[in-house]
Length: 447
Image (cartoon, rainbow, N blue to C red; front, side):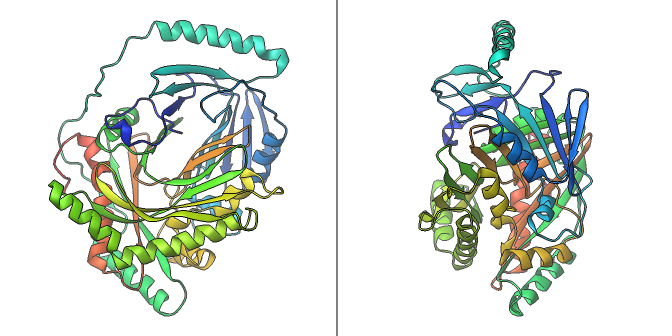
């Protein structure tokens, strides 16, 4: 499911026909849950309550809720929408040497929302409430229907807005130091401490471009199946992620689609086909993908029934607007004792953003990286009242904090990695994100 505002050109590349928009500007959500440093606060109107564990809070809230609904063509029937930051690993028995300046998680309890069916060109207004409050939902639907009927159609093709200038940015770990960190990671691998270490970096810049305008540019330039836009006060997230962390259906079926292996699109059809073939056969990328596939298999196997975990697709090349990716698909079925929250917690953080083995590699990464990753490397999506969930991996994303923007980039380091190629790969991943600021067809200056 997409949490976006509009369908981009090339929407046929997107594997879900639905988008969700939660509320029009200024309307209050039922509650907002914020997790910071191991404790949470829940704001519900003027009231606030506190707890110590986000996972327990979400589990208990969903367990208290039973949804009765007519047959609908979309899986989200109300629930929590928001993000899990990478530092939530501290609540999953992982190390946490860095503290993010942003909350580790924010979830909005969405009981009224709009769903856009792009394939059928239809708009759904949906709400959930206790039986005695259904009149409030009906009134909300009537008011929104009037509001929607007064809207004018937007242009069919979104207009890229930007001044064409290249963006100036600062790299958290400069190139030569990043190359040294790669060498250090490879020394850990040679010593048997890890098999694969997903090292990351950050780009910082300032902009006057509104985050929503940037997101619309990004969706036009780089459409992706798990694109998302979240506006959370001073913090806004514009994401063009192609990666599914977890998709959990009401019947308990689980799917994860880790990505490991990236090459650029070609300048001609012949070059494009050559690059696809090269990615499919590349020994290093296949080793990266296989290790992470095995890690995810282990993670979801902790909460799925014995014998239900399968790998129906191993190392398939998928093509997006700017890159080719090597993608595997894993499926399973939750055991009778496990909940969707149990599954999310067991698999968090995404193995494609850590490396393997996970816990030891997380410890190594806390020493190799200079600061918290924050929202980058976490997840955006929903956890539904009907025991469903759909969460992406926060990659190909820009996090806006007023005019300050951070862009996370990274890549998997193995013993076979060549440092210069790893640097080129993270700059390739940043290319579309930086281009969306200027809406310029030319590439930014990466050096």
